Image 1 (spheres, helix red, strand yellow):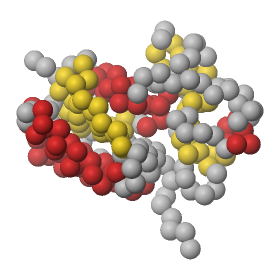
Image 2 (image 1 turned 135 degrees about the vertical axis):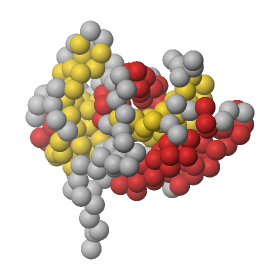
Image 3 (image 1 turned 120 degrees about the horizontal axis):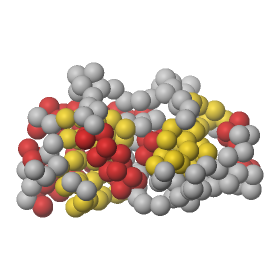
Image 4 (image 1 turned 45 degrees about the horizontal axis):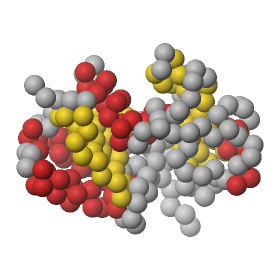
Amino acid sequence: MTLNILLIDTSSSCVEFGYACDDRLIHEYRSCEKNSADTIAYEINKFFKTDGMSPLETHAVSLSNGPGSFTGLRIGSAFAKGFCFAAGCKLVQISSLDILANRANLSAQKFAAVISSNSGAGEFYYSVYEKEDGKCKRISGYSVALMKDISSMKIPIVSETPLPVEFSGEVELADLHETAIQSHHQLAITMVNDQTFTDISNAEPFYMKEFTIKK
């Protein structure tokens, strides 16, 4: 039986989704337009209509669950849970940092994956990883820190967006290979095969920080 997985990422300013049949990605979509998270339901519905597949053929939805954009995470979580409920499929939640780290083009060494918190305070979400037998292994918890504190660890950094200019010459930026959806797909297959599912009634975005309104 073919394993069909819908992959969704609304955790950043660029919204992505993909559809995979076993180990083959048959569709990839990415949009960096403003408010693109609001169109994710429309784009996914358009894919199903164009491809001629039924949402009911989907076995699992894999969601990039944060940290990241508060609004994007809420939109993605609400859609993923609603889709799973309607289609009767399972939900997988994967950290956005783990998906980013899995793209690192590095040999066996420690590195940090970082995502800007966009809080205005210059903070970054991060975690430390290492490559082991070609696989990415997380070796620290998920944390929030300033770039000066992350860079003081003197290890390569993986980031999809440019770092603050004052750190451009101080840290080693690792190259990325694969797209985010391809990396997401790899991790999702493992979690689905291991049956690491999330109860949709308890599923929540991984914010890491409380949302505050600037005055």
